[in-house]
Image (cartoon, rainbow, N blue to C red):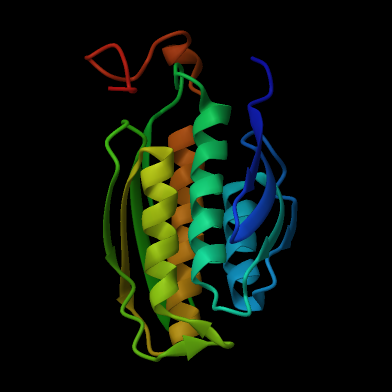
Length: 199
């Protein structure tokens, strides 16, 4: 099986993004968005999903973080979708729990071509490290929609917002790792009774 990877370049009046994702990676990352807390969350996806992610994003942060976060989510979803191709041979779905101190995050994903998100991160504060907490949901929605995936992500317990968010992102990474895993028993077979995951 050839290495599954993709590079996406996205340029608008609001953002400029260059992104490479290697599905069969080592958990390596080189991520710069200008948003420290957001970078920290994206690094969790790489390290705990064992994906290699190289991301350079320049956005209109003088306005706010919204466009950068949204467009990174779109680009990341496009890169995963492109790298996975027709998805033949993959497991397709996965789920994981991930604890972080007092917090416990849960994520389930389905790469079945039907974008949908159910999110309950239970973030109570207004921001983390200067990052607006509501943008985590917006990123995850943009990521799932662009990837044409179903994300169900829930903070099961926790007190600290940083811990709750990080536990959820680590759980998402582990669930994506499971879903994108290549299964020799499914070689050449698209994991759907419809015969396609693009419709």
